[in-house]
Amino acid sequence: MRLIARTVRNLLDAAKEAGLTCEVIVADDASSDGTGRAAEEAGAAVVRHERRQISATRNLGARASFGDLLIFVDADTWPNARALRQAVDAMQAGAAGGGASMRFDGEVPLYARVIAPLFNLAFRIKGRTGGAFFFCRRKALEAVGGWDETVFAGEEIFLAIAIKRTGRFVVIREPVLTSGRKLRSHSGWELLGVLLRVVVSRGSIRRRESLDVWYGPRRRDDPGLAAGRIMKSN
Image (cartoon, rainbow, N blue to C red; front, side, top):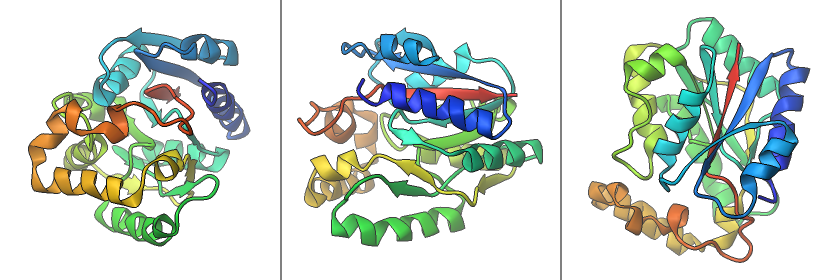
């Protein structure tokens, strides 16, 4: 809740600066901390369910939105006007979908500062993106059946692969600022363990119980944020 108002205001201000008309929808998944109220007060529309699943929550936001150009933004991510403009321009130029490179707010561990540029480069080369900032045309999302609700993590990779089969998938030039809270509240060994479980046992991404980084109890230094949000632009 502590960051949701900032995120909504950031999206509205960035869209205005970019010359875009948009709606901001907060998809609230089982929050109990006043997230929905804070989002509405900041200027967003709010839809809610009790699924505790990222994919389902993003689909909820998409169904509640209007327009053909969709931008999914995590609740702790703050794209600037250039990023929004580039995403919209890419879709208007015919791209089916895309994303952006990420940079973290605040201090993050040394290993993250070393690895993050390598991940960004690999995603750019392979045409993949993290879920913090993901855009697509509505018809492309509908053509692939929406976000995959059989998985509890990695859904952005599956969607990028699926959308890439329908058309062009681009990674915009402008990086997007996102929270490094998971890097600060979990050790490198914990995050590596999650990654290894996903790689070794693909079935782990289909069980919420094995993915505490996303679904487990929050640490005290984890601000506690809404599950996801969608921005629609005409």
